Image (cartoon, rainbow, N blue to C red; front, top):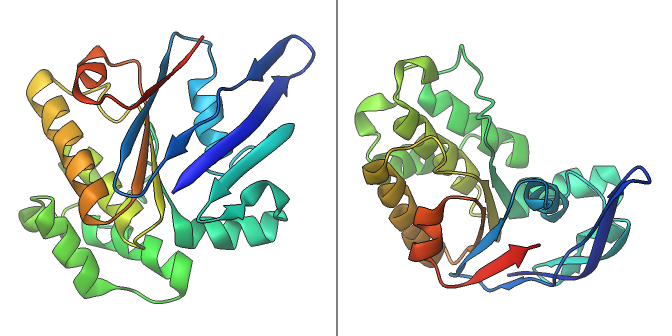
Length: 209
């Protein structure tokens, strides 16, 4: 599970965020919503340890990640946090399977080949394993990102606008898929979004204002 307490963050002296507390248990999906400039992506980056809060606590699996050094945080993130960012950051010369395997190797030093193949097949990507990311549709690329985020069975998956570039049909497919995977993998799924379609799909929401 993931929870926060009294998180604040500032950009210089002009922009200061005081974020509401968040709790998302394993198997749950939580939305972070709010207008542009309200700090949605900033909060997501704090939850993932990509930014350090000025004050407050981020608790993942009973551990306050704000206490970690950068080195320890990198290690913890690899084992406990999966990220689905707006930019996929694929290795363009790697196949779909190789991109997912890279995530497992970076976290554990091993390539979980069978697990990666099974996960990709589970996401209806069986026929895409040996294609390059550039050969996939946007929706397929999004599912590869989800597979990469889940390969190490993290305690938390953080998704930044996962449906913003998808049409209605694929947006609802991804939303249903994320919810299903949260329950199946007992992962706390936190989604940052301004997509009104997701606001209707998930009741557990935090609105930044």
